Length: 279
Image 1: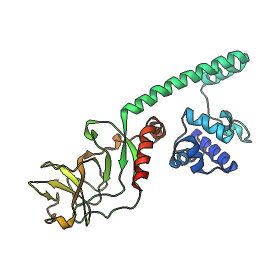
Image 2 (image 1 turned 90 degrees about the vertical axis):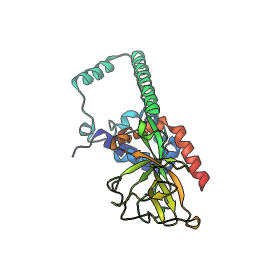
Image 3 (image 1 turned 120 degrees about the vertical axis):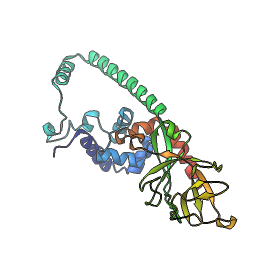
Image 4 (image 1 turned 30 degrees about the horizontal axis):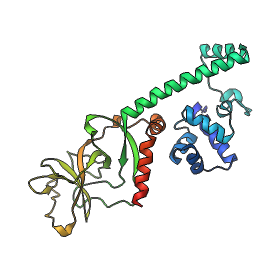
């Protein structure tokens, strides 16, 4: 199977990183990004944006043409991306330009790309929010055991259904159908207040559960798995209110994740500060 451009770029990054004896963690730290982002680049799942690509070339000693596989390859013809006739003509005309005119064209292209990226990042900043992806799921009955994994984060499109949400909680099992299905992910707003008729994530000595608020009580959505009377010694704590169910289209697309993360770097840093403060 012919290698696509993303895979080609990823392979060049991986090979040069290995040659320079730089770990994925060190490269991520120097670029101000995360190790999973580097892994996604090297696997060809995503590609670095213009700013990261420039910094990457400087750190790894690559030229842009090296990264695209134009140099140093015996199978150069098969590795090069294909161009349209119009693009091929533009390249031909570019090579006819005098050095001073080439520099002018380079600056013009760079300026247009930066302007385009700035608009795109601003859109990502406004359209998406960072939200914590909690590792402990919730269920009915005795609930789910608590996970010792660290929470991660993702980005979701801002919509009325998730206004005020700060956590994602995964639903485990079929014990809450038809209200919640196994594999559902719910938006949760952290709160201790309870409003009758609303659903809440609750932490108990037995595990994490989803319950509905009644008159001075919490009850199970599944009548076959009733929530027993709880007392002070049972340590029932309301984690947050369920606002709705996440739809697949709410999540950031894989190909946009890196750019959305860059646009929300202040939020990412705040998440990491808060995470380390809990350790």
